[in-house]
Length: 358
Image: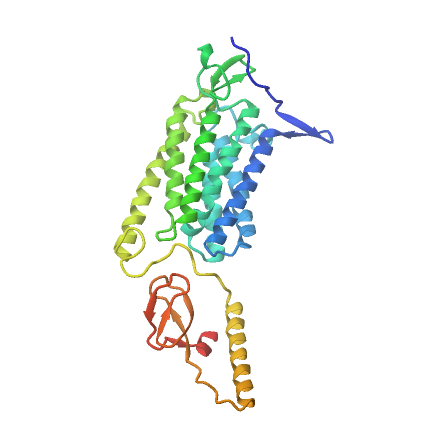
């Protein structure tokens, strides 16, 4: 048997006598990077970035609970009484984490009264990156590998991984999944950064399809001890559901957008955007309007005191863009939306500034 061509690190290191597992370090690093990615995409879509703290509080606990519970319930070698006792030895299911995290996103959206698909689209690219980083925790734990590699020419890392407990080489499935998740992250992040047209939810569908397809192919090839389920390979079944569900949901979103706006992407009239208009609270809007009125009155008084005839001030109206639904203050009968740049006839506006402030 060929000796390993790389240094095999220990599972943990100590700080003040306390064992810190590399598995946990990888997961924490993945979570931090996922939060950064989600924050960037939320800012890109004009969703308040300070909401990220509420998102973490909703998603992270439910994600961890879901990951551990799914693993314990579906693992024949683990009893429910070991939910806490074996927590530090691994035993976290990504599929369970996705289910728990999705419940956390739903809770967040109910609290902030925001569309679930908009937030999910901002979360899933970071989730794919977190999985790419977290898979290296399996490397330190020497788990999630495939069948034995008997050909000495193929016994090299990272194509294969050396398992010390068996003193044999195995296919490095954790590494393959890490590379695929990294590629999925790059595609989804680029898509979310460049894609500005409706419908929302396509990034989430892309994640479900890609991850479900990857797991459904690799799951049957794993070593049997890492396949969750008793008589039925539960992870494999859930992977198929995620893959098929993601594809069907994407088709449904495109069909719905075509029925509502006349096109699968964008709209036949105007340009509905997936990026929201900049978010303002009611208090911020009111102060914004009040400050503008005070400045205009001050300029008018200054002109009158100087003896100049005051120039007529065009009427200002609060209008709603017919293309993207953005609400802003316009002057006159013709306006151009500052968000999607669609020109339209205001018709004198639907509400005055004073009415909008109320």
